[in-house]
Amino acid sequence: MSSIFISTLSMFILGLFVGALFFLLYSMLTSRKREQSLKKEVNVILNRAKSQASKIERVSKQKAKEWGEQETKRVEREIKSEREKLKNQEYQLKKNQEKLNAEFHIKENELNKFSGDLRQEKELLEISQKQLESLKDKVQNEKEQSKKTLEKIAMMTQEEAKEQLKKLFEENVKKEIFKDLLKIEEDMKKEHEQKAKFLLAQAMARYSAEVTAERTVETLPISGSSTKGKIIGREGRNIRALEATCGVDLLIGEGQEIVTISCFDPVRRAIAKKAIEKLMEEGRVHPAFIEEVVEKIRKEFFSEMKEEGKKICFDMGIHDISLEIIKVLGSLKYRFIEGQNLLKYSTEVAYISSLLAGELGMNKKTASRAGLLHAIGLGIPHFVEGSYSFVGAQFCQKQGESETVCQAIACHDGKKPARSLLDHILQCAYNLSRSRSGAKRDLLDSYINRLKDLESLANSFDGVKRSFAIQAGKEIRVLVDTFKVVNDEQMSMLSWDIAEKIKREMNLNEEVKVSVVREYRIVEHAR
Image (cartoon, rainbow, N blue to C red; front, side, top):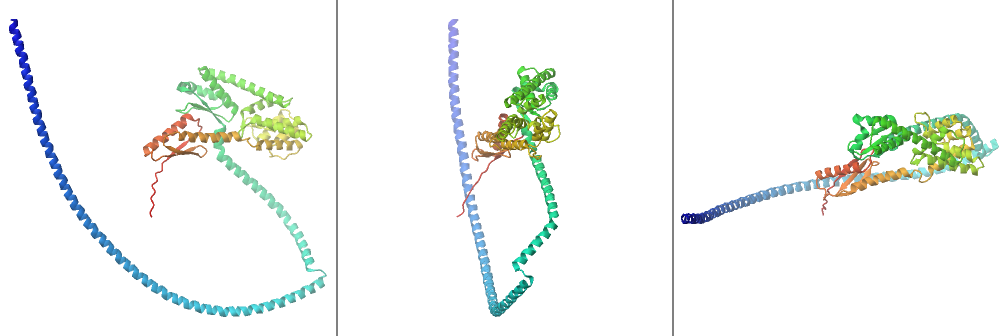
């Protein structure tokens, strides 16, 4: 049984082997036939392509030959027409030349005739000139005789008569026009004052926006959207509570991680900034806690301002000064005028006034007191009407300052005439401090640094050749390399990237326009 199974199995394996061998042979034969058929098809396609190419070549040569013949005929026709035009122009030129020659001969004859007439008139004029000279000499002699006769009759010379008439005329004219001159001078003064006020109002209207954005806004960076959400609060209740408690306007832009604090009062801005920093440190923000923090910080601020005012008065040796004046003096630490800290500026004026008074033998303490208080009107709330010098003088008068000091404060800026020596000293110290070289430098430096930062930020991008910050930093123009930025799409992407980087890395209070300029210039020379 086992031998039958083994023989059957061996026969089965042998059959499988033979079948596999036959299948392999069959597949080789079929693949060879397929390869031969493919070669035939390729040869047929190649032959067709060659015949098509030769046909196209013959047709193109024929068309080129026909086009060349047509162009040759057209060029010959154009040359022929141009030659005919040239002949016509040459004929017209000859006719014009003949006409000009004829006109020239006519004009030449007329000119010869005119020159003859002119010679005759010249001879007559010379004769008349001689006669006129003789008559002139005769009249001069008669005039001299008449003058001598008049001098004998009047008993005075001609110069004496002229001088007497001149004096009489001047006296009469002065009497007649003196009143008119006074009236004209007064009218001119009024007109000039009116024009000066108009020009000043124009300048104020033109630059008020820039000054407001620069002097009434402060920015505070915040980290993360969670902090921004805490400051805003649910339905904006936290930010409303901050605005109402601090008396400022808070602006939080989308996509910007800064809080903009806007207010005319710098003390309020400083309190709001300190309160927001404190709230961010604590991490919990709600209306009740906001009021508590703001009230605490306000007390600290007023206490600091009071201490600062006392310290300045002690350093200057000024005593017996009202507590309200001390508070306002301390608030000047947070106010600025033309880039200068107002408290330091007032201290500087006080020192200069004291030195000038000492040199002139006056009371140095009174001069120092007037110099320190001369700008106190700038620390009084803006809802009080009048110029800062007038408001400061009224405020000091109410707080018990002497009439001499109040008068000096009122006229330190030259708007009122000085009436005492102290008034002149304070005006001199005020002008010396304001005109000192470098006193207004901080504002200019910050402005220049802002322009430089804008340009360096734009220059950091690949493909940018140069950039220019213009219009006081409100616009930046970027010149790009034409070989690196090759199309409008790349220009759009570059301008968007620059704008995003400016928005991300610079604290902006206004919009900055980004203009990308690409110039592709091709120059050829015709020689």
